[in-house]
Image (tube, rainbow, N blue to C red; front, side, top):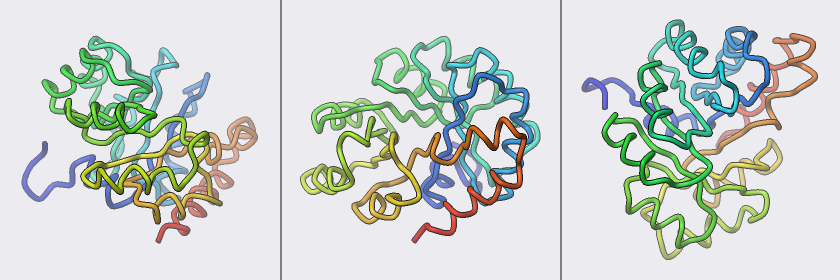
Length: 213
């Protein structure tokens, strides 16, 4: 994936650790939102396909950011969606579940696939079938120690806890061995979005980045 010497999406996520999940009803503000996040130090942003405008938004954002930023698609549950986001320029694909057709399409499209899984068996099966990273979801029901407990017998895994990750617990998730963190509503502040307060969002992003080990 990518030219020699060029950072891939997985390189960016591995290095920067935070994938910000954008799940909004209105994506008309996506450009300003991304500018604030990037200015705050975020380098991986996921737009969920729960919004029908997400594919067009991914294409628009990819046309403006440089190679230090990875733009991905979330809530992907069909092969058709994989090809749509691949054509839009998405650099990684996230799903709440593992599905064979999505896994196969991502492998064919040469896109990192990050399916959701909950139990050790689900996590290992997703990994064996080609997942680049396994999204441990919903992490708020499992706790930070769960990551360490799973990695103890399965240290080869790359785990990305998602759901309930925030400024207060992010360092502990990473200390327990998380490969990266999926961060959503705890960073994407609804009041800031409603007020178009991009400086507030930039500062919140910076608070997260500054808490990284």
